[in-house]
Structures are given as C-alpha cells and as structure tokens.
Amino acid sequence: VLADRHFVRCAATLAMVCGVGLTYLAGASFVFQEDYGLTSQQFSLVFASNALVLLIGTQTTARLVDRIPSRTIVSWGLVAQSVIGIACCTVLVAQAPVPVLWFSFTLLIFFHGVLVPPLTGMAMDRHPEHAGPSSALVGVAPFSVGALVAPALGMMSAGVSTALGMLLPILGALAALT
View 1 (cartoon, helix red, strand yellow):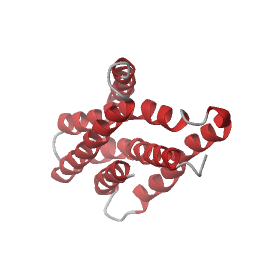
View 2 (cartoon, helix red, strand yellow):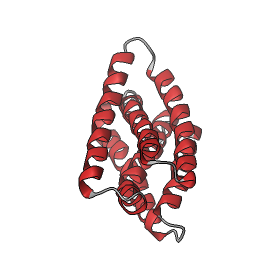
View 3 (cartoon, rainbow, N blue to C red):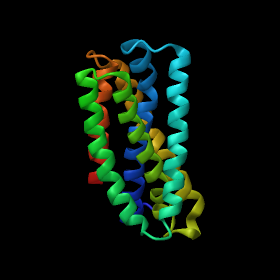
View 4 (spheres, rainbow, N blue to C red):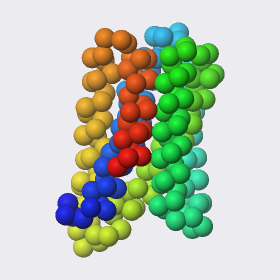
C-alpha cells in the first residue's frame, strides 16, 4: 500500500488533519483555564460542546457524501480548516474574549469532524485486499503527528497559547498541501 501515492497522500493528509485536532486537544485546557481563567467545570462545558460539534461534523459529512464526492468535501474542508487555523491564531494573539475563542475552536473541531471520515474512506477504498495493513497505517499516522506536536506545545518558551496559535495554521496548511 505504501507504493500507492493516493494512499500515502490520503494518509498524510489525514495525519495532518488529526494533528490539528490533537494539537487543539493537547493545548485547549491550558489556554482556556490558565490564560482565560475558566474553571474546570466551565472548561468541561466547552469540551463537551466540542464533542457535540465533532459529532455534528461527522454527521454532516454522512449526509453530504451521497450528493457530493468525498474528494470535493475534503478539498473544501481543508481550505476551511486552513482559514480557521489562521483565524484561531489571530484570536489567540489578539487575546479575544472567551466566546470568540470558543467559536473559532468550535469551527475548527467541526471541520475536523467533516474531514476525518472521507479521508479515511479515500485512503482505504483502493486496497480492500490489504485492509489490515492499510488500516494500521491510517490509524498510526495521525497519532504519530500528535506524538510530535503535543510536546511541542509545552516546549515552546512563548507559552501554550502562542504555540497553539502557531501550530494550528501550520498543520492546517500542511494538510491542505499534501
């Protein structure tokens, strides 16, 4: 399967898309609680709302995929994720109010939900005879990126908000370019 450029591109794109989601996951609690002063209970509501939005994103794709080709959904989703990553960076740098920050992250998570199912399907659809190895590679790629970016958030001396603001648009752009 690694000889198939389509598979490798889809897996790499999925890895970067998940890198965006895992970067948010690794840094959001620090940003909302330490930088914006939310309590644990308040952050749990933010996090729960994001889980709901992720579900809505995946269900949106499920409804669209019968009418719009997966490739088109992914193309538009990647553009949206890249633009929203830049918006998140702007919001973080400007230290915008919590509702603005929450809304920008919510959009980011929505498009994460939109992108993951079709990218997974696109990667897997050409190799039904190698479903096990294909699935393993598609599964490990995103967590490999996550394993690299999560510690990077804490190691950057500028702070988690700045690191998150830098990494989200970079990973979004890498996803769009793969």
